[in-house]
Image (cartoon, rainbow, N blue to C red; front, side, top):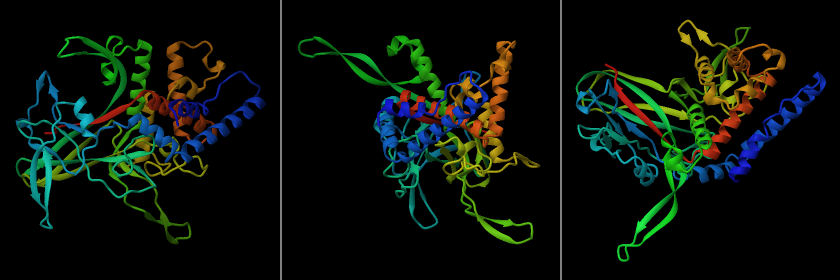
Length: 434
């Protein structure tokens, strides 16, 4: 499937708003909703074939992730010796290391550390040290699972909507006791741009200039170094923001598959529990707190990530209206807050509200305010009304119209990611919490 075909398929879910009678509006809404359902079904149907092939074309050079433990504070660099721990990675694979190395030349494989586990097997870790403050993360390939798009599988070299994975970090304390570490995840996008490259012949001393494609970090694009217009650059930067908004991070993977359910008559039965993760990192940060740790011993800290394939996997509180397709990202519940704090679903909906400009494209279309709602209001008042209207749609995502508007905005953002971003890296920054 070509980029244009994918874009057309995504845009087929968008609806145009025009003045209509109540009857014609209802009819139009029904027709538009049918188009959305049909388009989404096509995306899902071809998810493991056509769409995946499209994503392979886009992300064929995707590198694995990086861990960066250097930070700045008040203009001063926090050095390795100041840290009460080291960070390590373990695994047999670094994804497309050659491409990654060409872009991020200051990342090392890490200093080898050998640890004998409880079964007398020697495990190799690659860690930071007094001279290495940036390392590449590793992973072990897992068995192929055709039901998922986990990129740690041998047959999945690409990333796109529906993909998931885990960043496997190890914290190694330098001395016995407690360790606190702050962890921040950042998604960095790259695009292929055409640049002129001049080569001088060593014999004739003649210069030959050819046009080549070069991956450039989105944040570093200018009209001079990329040959792109400012409008094109602005659109690409917004696509990177969509990518950052659509990739979500979590502290835990759900391993519970059944739960006890007590009926009104007191009968207790078991029900299937199907959701992917727990404890979302809504601001792309998390912490590691360890106590009674032993020096020079690796302690596992996984960070799970997912690029949800559909809006329903994130926003639907319960699937009684059958809006959701696919496994929910977190446990579905209508309870947003408990005495101990917000539920995972409450946190995810809060994330969508606080990051709506990075989750949905065309907020004006998602809100779909009427002329009566906007007449006589200032731009500031209209902007506030758009925000509050979308928040209400998110809180009531199972409603047919709300679901349609939110899905259109979410799918359109995915389309922009697919047509504008060629490569990305997830950087993990780790700093001491004490």
